[in-house]
Image (cartoon, rainbow, N blue to C red; front, side):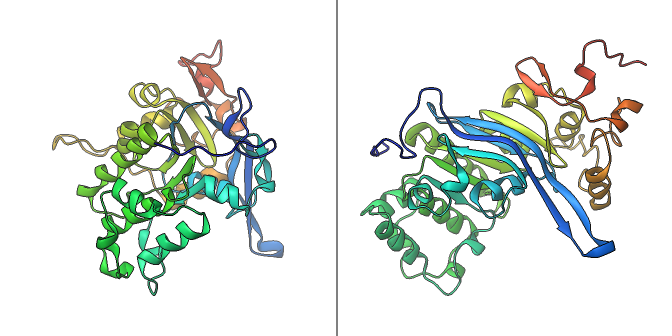
Length: 336
């Protein structure tokens, strides 16, 4: 069970009816490379908005292919990058006023893609647990959190990261993140670096934390199979924009945006007669789609019209989700 926290007026744990746990509004990030005449810019995150509920724990996934901007969104929320525009609110407070504060660091914890980059190779793994316990006044939490992920202090005691398997180290990374008793985990491609046979055991941990510990999870991934299994809601990103957002079953069972349909068709299934229908992670394609006007998917869309290449579509509410595609505009003639 989760331990309760004090909710003094003005603290980030003070509850306000209807308040979101995390709210992202019009989030935008522009990266600039080069100087002078050879300077170029890329709109890595473009007007992204979504929110996580505070009154119930949920797993919200941001998914897309390589170069979609999903990991940049995570970095912006964690404070590793500064937004160019937009707003990020955590429990109703502007995130820029919370970053670096101990309460926020306790409440929001990251889990990164490569566990071998999470831990210093010259530092024993157990030291991270003992230091976190001490810094956040959580005596005994390390032992309990390790048990939650199927490890023990004896298994990590005296060991350096190189002396543990990738699966063990990723579970240790997750356990360390739980020591502070967080409300939100931000996990970025947490299973892509570990053996396939261990991936579902790690994914099941996230479901367990949501259901038993009341922890909400922002799950960043390119893996639609694990996203479908673990998520409540999902946002599909393409070249910095969310193109479809809604319940994971609606979005992935019956995708509406042509890009989501392509992503789904590209997921390999355990049938030797089925094959990948396309290669969707081409670097030259990424560069063209980021800078092109109109819909970022126009160059690959089977329903494209001239308007799609000129003007960016709005969001349309369809079947309980938002879809950024002209197909769903009233009066749109798909056959024309």
